Image (cartoon, rainbow, N blue to C red):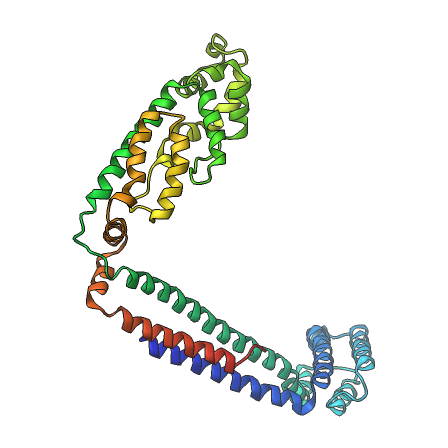
Length: 376
């Protein structure tokens, strides 16, 4: 289905729902909402008694005591029905008809037939509410399609911004220093984690909370407290993980409180094993020049705590916006990395502006429809 067909179908459905709602609302107004509400309540109460007692008072199952009880219930319902209720005469006729000694199913069928005009009117409020629900759903469907249009427009506008990207630009001018830094900092963190005490690593992670662009996951509290408060925290993380594998009797030879170590470490093994230097790396494709500057500033503070030698490679990355045609190279990298073959083809076909125009027109038409068919 084309965009145009989809839009027209949604609007046509909204229009149809409004017409049906108006028709049913006019029908309600013909008698009055309060009057129909009273009628519906009266009918429901009367019908409920018929439904409960029919099998009990007809045929061989009928007995005088149950019949009297049934008629008393009908009398109770009739007493509660307002004298001026719509079709009061029908209720009275049914009540009079039911004042007999014995009943058959045909007697009940006769009463149901008498109540047919009442049953029809008793559905009108529900029919109106059903039409109102359908109308509101049609509006929600239009709003949902508007959101879809806006998302598609955002995607196409992003593509349009990249339409001038030079796909032949030498992006290795950015990629090589970034990759070299990433490799170096990951190796540096591996060495830090291998050789430093667990306490040093945990303190480093705590310090990183002051640097929101360096997104390390904070260590679990019980792990951090155990490492900080116990002599075992002076051991590297790998050694502590090895201890956690020992039996308690063997662990007695290495730590003061084996149970405390196992409680703190065993449940968080996955966290400690997965801890690596990825949060210290530079994304690819790279950030905008301004974002890169802020990220390198925070990374410098972090990496300097691990291996100051790697900071030199980070400075080379930080200088790329000043020393290269950064935006051209970055846009080319973004296009190559992030866009699918289909999106690249759309870029080259120059059809994006036509698609944008069509989507904007659809969105505007749908928004106009919501104005023409307001919330109810």
